[in-house]
Image 1 (cartoon, helix red, strand yellow):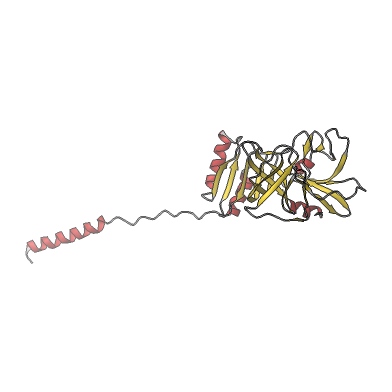
Image 2 (cartoon, helix red, strand yellow):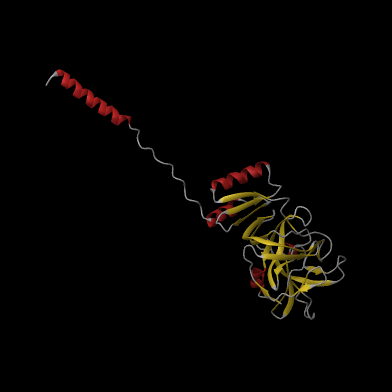
Length: 293
């Protein structure tokens, strides 16, 4: 073989080798971790987030909406943001207007201690008449009155559940005639209540309370968790209905259906509006073995 032919053959082999080595090695594509389930996210939030002024709920699209109020700032907000980011893109952060608070206060309505609340629903069970109100109201005092001067006794606390839940059962005096079962609408009229159920997302609802009267809105979430600052309250109904201090315990309803008891929220019934959370009434009825009437 001629030397020129040999040189060409070697050159061809070298070129081929260089062509092979010039091909970049295949790079591994980054793999996005699967989204955590809403149940897993909620479980993590329950154990990791106890900051007052926070709340969360599962949305219809499967994401978890984590809300925080105007008091969650600085290092508190940094910590909350870091914890939610670690839970992935299944979490959505939302800032609420105003401060998240229970809606009990001093003034008119049903009175216990130095506070006022609102009567929720009249109920009957085990041979006696009672009424439901918020658990954080029931914790305040054992005796309740219908006047600010504590002259007219309306009932005595049988049981109260707060935090965790937010409902209480107040017994009317023994021998009292059957109290009216209607919800006062603060317009001279009343609405009879004959059943209790849980509203669906988007249901148009009404809320009545001694401070702000009658207001309406829609259900914006179910099974919400709220941190007012004295322990988590779970399983709440979130709505766009406004409420104010003193409205705690008041009824959430539509037509003849009882839905919930006012727990707390943000804003007021003037310019800001707000977000209000309610204790489902069905849970309270089951706990005490009573029915609405």
